[in-house]
Length: 422
Image (cartoon, rainbow, N blue to C red; front, side, top):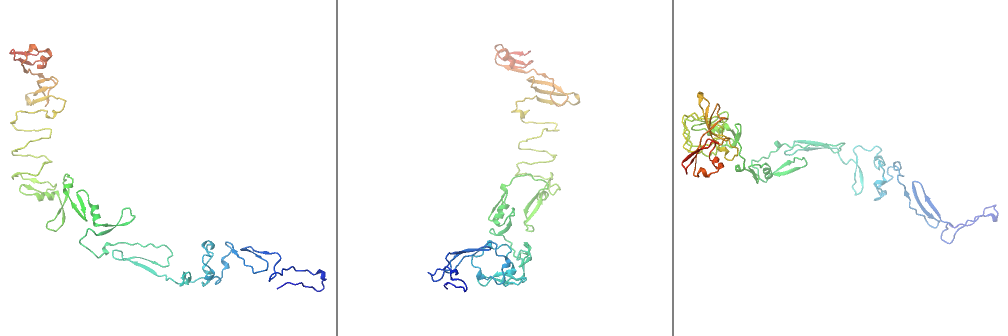
């Protein structure tokens, strides 16, 4: 509409006020454009001069809408556009179930929010029944493992136990490709092993594993001594016991025969010497742990080596076919020389008589001693030595080297006997 002058009755014409207006457009406008500004919870600005409608964008400030501003049915899904509401714009616990459309003041027990029939929508109702789920064990597991409810109010732990007796499938043969379930020693994982890897794990000294088969190679086994209480394993020929155990005593019974008796409590084998034992073969050595007496004659066709310190004989006559008796044979490579000779026991007639080589005198000596040993004091024997070089042509040192003091030297060039006196 256009503005015109309005005359007020009783007012002089010169005192009438005039309203300025612009009549150039289709509608009257304000002489000066005015700015509309909104402040408070909602902010926004816009310029208005009256020539056209004003459209102003308004912004709701952070945390300006409170939970008591929402009423049932006041906001529908069309009012919430995509991405208009983000997690940062909804404060914690600002929306409660009583503020949601379609929910009664106190809610309905058992009802939950679920996805609606149309994508992007939600529904409110009893979607899940609070039923109990029971886990039953299968073959190899305990019959009842445990149960839990759909509406869980806390953590629930279910334990699965394996019972091998509950497995009905059996097999007498184990193939090399069969698999086993094993929990490793580090308790970090359950792994699968095959019969082949199991055999490799069990293989050790003298044992080898190939394709799930463990073989025993006795040639690779070490050699040890057999004690009385040791046990052995053997395959039973009659099949009553596929693998049986026997001891050293059982071995004595097994070896018992003509002249042999086994089964002693200490595992030893007795030999009846009234029987003839033709030969003992296959032995590189024969050990006798205790004192052994031989009442009959003993003939040895091979060499006799005695490692003991003393040989005692009660025979009246000792016959030796060899023409050499080698004393102190263990000093062949030793630089420490010792007295060497023969001690004759004289019984009650007196001290023992000794004939020996005295190292300190470097001569054969004689003497007596109350014990079995060489005396500290002895007399050197006069030893006859021969030289083919005239004594007169030898130096004094060469002459002294021929014999010790008291020794005699025969000069074959002059047929004379010489005695060394000093």
